[in-house]
Length: 637
Image 1 (cartoon, rainbow, N blue to C red):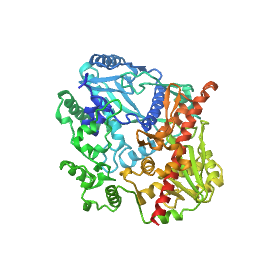
Image 2: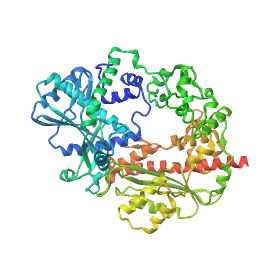
Image 3: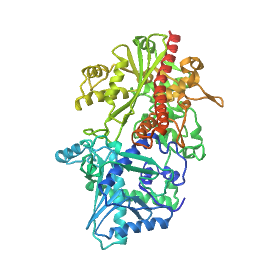
Image 4: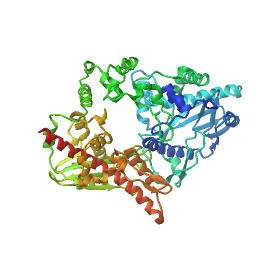
């Protein structure tokens, strides 16, 4: 094990998911998507919320710490202890360290014999729902409504705070035993029940990514957030809520510290107990080899069973087979089996999932595509013109304009490929907002103009319906008057539990009517397109598709891997998945690429092109799949 040995809040979360992962993490094993696009988006929101929190405490003192050695850990903790001897002090990211347990509180506020630990989170909170639960059910927003215990996604956050409080209690007991301090834990969170009073709030923040990183476990590692607005306006705004979690934390301190000590003992004693048994949960293991490091945690755990093909972990909804208590996969592992073909067909008796599972096993054995008997009829019923649409959206923690709530749906880009009639080429149209304003109504109006009321609209999954539904209700909330748009939205999207959507979901069609062995148990666009593309050479000859063909070392690349990379500044950038598109858009809105001068406008244009080419491919991917389905169905007939 590397030294010094310590257990951070994130280490504790890792260990709870799998103790073996803690072992790999401490040894620095490589991971797949260590910081993926979606995590970066959430982090961006957390950076800005943290910056706002710091603005609310202008007298705060930042504890700078480089925590590479045991000595540096002790010194940083001693600095925190020294400040706590003052009557009144506000600390940003004080270091809490005791007996190998390490945490950095976001904000610590000491006033006399009372100390607040404030955890800043960008997770949406609903103060009205919280108050109603307290008043009418003697519960809280953080508790399970059935059991009354701290639960759900909030449990991990509150455990983080409980860990901090527990370490601080131990520090005080050792170093300041005569100091009587009441510790009051709080969350500072964006409140869905409130709106901001500041117009274009996001425009006052700029995130700068720094090239140097410090080993400090700071939320601002490698990041600087600049604020150019009016601090007094921030102080008056009701966008964030500070909420007490004292009773919830008190409930979790003891079990959290007990768990932490168990994991620490594993690390210190190098105990074999740290190695958890392999199970169905390993499917999501991120500890896989990389181009730079061939250590593979998953393979190390699974041994020869890791190389079995087709693997049982790739079976559709495999974790549900056998039930939650006795999953079949775990029993197979105990028997030394990991092949999908080892699954007894008679146990596939769940009406919801078994048909798809049986299709996958049968056609994986045959190594051929499958289309249902119904698919040809379904395709014939699709009316022209056919519009293939895809939206890029973002739910940003910072509201766009005064009167908006946090995490409201923001639709910033759409792409559409239209086939006017059989055998006609696919014509592409697109729209992208770069005006740093709330774009939803202009988004919907431009889309309505292209789609009109004729033909069929195809999507992949239900996201597009959800976006159009949200815009319909936003028109009412914000008093946006356009009767034609309101009627079109009502006639196009399913608005509630009743009613019918006029959007045809190709993902649902895939799940019921199409399978390809290379898709394995997945039906996302990023899985279906490469499977079809790599095994049907005729598609590469179609003029509209030729730009996406590339072969490297005898392997045909997925069209998403062919999207051009661009040199933007000192970095090579590419947008080839949805989270990356959201991240690029947020960077354009309040990142380093915002407000670029005339001399650097080319950089902004490059980011625009990355967004255009990705969204454009999503709708072209649907066209490719559609064309292939038509060919398969014609052959069946």
